[in-house]
Image 1 (tube, one colour):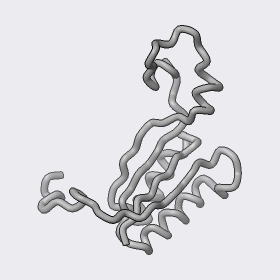
Image 2 (image 1 turned 180 degrees about the vertical axis):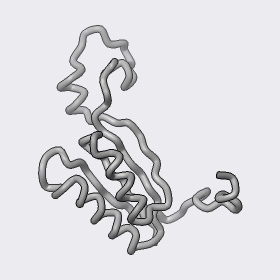
Image 3 (image 1 turned 180 degrees about the horizontal axis):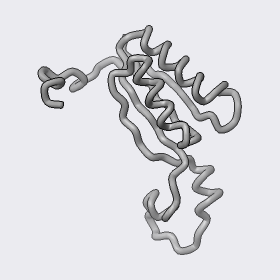
Image 4 (image 1 turned 90 degrees about the vertical axis):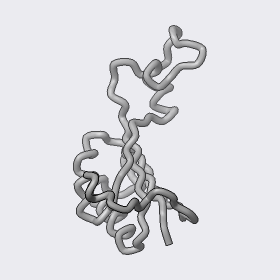
Length: 122
């Protein structure tokens, strides 16, 4: 079965180690987004000069967004287990504060994951 692994990394300093661990575990590819939770926004961006429809950039100007959200579609169960273990090896026990949030959801259909000649295009 194919899975979507989503990991919200709380400590951006661990980002390079996570990418290295995932690559070593066999992750075929990763999509990465800068992200921030509403708690972070409320704690650090309570301002009265915000536009009516603020963007994330408006909310935290000039500051590094503290989180990275990583996505990967993983078709192999063994790779999935290795990636989860590798992630915990970097961030520690997920029951502790400020480690992040990891979840896995089943994927029933994937389009565009494999493209003929993709390796030649690199």
